[in-house]
Image (cartoon, rainbow, N blue to C red; front, side, top):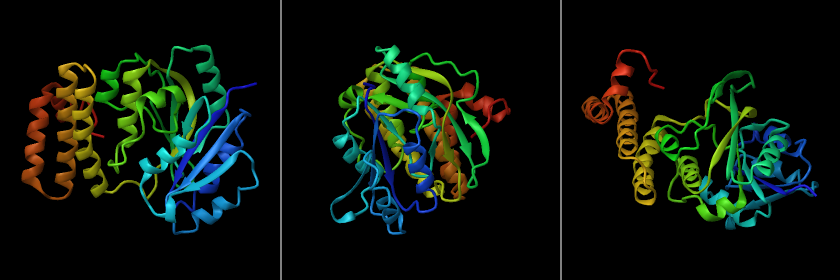
Length: 293
């Protein structure tokens, strides 16, 4: 009997994309999975579309009491509490799994019992499904070093990974106080617990569209980043250079947001903090050797 996999999808107002996401899971080549979709108080018809899949015994639709909106972290935590699988995968409600994602990643974890998480490449697509670029790029090598993952969250999350449920049990639940960057917070907590590995190949498609994160959302993301960094520092013996460079990166990102908001003095202050914290990388950006993505 093949190991059971739990796939979780938190869904909020994704009427235009939810069918494609759900069917990419139900059509997996790997046969033994349960699919838990948690509706997060959708008001655009998403919940009604999800009800159409009740006929499939592998599919389970959950929601918050009163069908209120509580955020992605709270929704994922409901799914984690209900999960029965040996492995857990997460798919955002506007993304799509490759048909062989579960098959390839389960096979890898079964053959490598010391690895707690495996991830592959994510192909960015536009609203119409046209392919844009891969993350991480071809030639990527994984050292299983939490320092590198904290500094630059280079994984395509969350759809790129498959995680042992036992590792999730150790890492704990998603932080419900975070309404941004909760995936980065979780993945570094996982990396602190168990070795992680990279398996080349596209395993999911993530959508870049007009509903993507706003400038206000970016500001929230980078502010939350400072709290994530503080918690990581208190939890794990990261290198001091990692902490310093991550803090510099967060200042740079906030500087970009402030500049876009035309808050130039605030932007300048953050850029100076970034330059002092990581002068080598800052100079590479200024000289054009590294893109300020």
